[in-house]
Length: 249
Image (cartoon, rainbow, N blue to C red):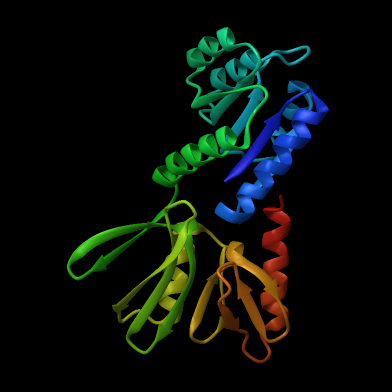
């Protein structure tokens, strides 16, 4: 989940940025957050960035937060928006542009985390999903929740982030004739290139859930260690760094 904060008050902007970054590290490590002090500075970066959620102060200097979102809506952008305001009466203006929610100043951590969880839940319903047949039943798993897959013979074990507070890593073990390369091809079809990689003949990992890399292993966000096969370190580390550059918080 990629988030933009547009807030002109420096102390408030920095507090929101830090709290949002902390939340992402725990709940959505593949996400990132950027902060802007005005509608103008945000719009300057808008074309180069891809945001799922905007946290927008209604009373921005120059172009107001409402006017900014109206401009985006007029161009067809349906990005989720949460308005921030110190005046409760302004909240009703936000619903004219289909705001997800609002936050009243001073913003509490509890309220901020609640709207982030609400946005994450909506995004999960919209994000690419992997369709699996398990015991004759079709199941969908959001791509962003998959940590890694272990393939041993005809048994595949998928480790993913099950929704909750805090989220917990669950596993699905099932028989499958998919080879590791079949899995990679299928995941790339859904997620696009540069998201998943195979560091070892038995594992595929989502690069967003890698917390540390050394020459012979990857440490995942849940603490699990995935080995790196001999001769694969350079390719794996290069892919991880490229992913981090594109998704840095």
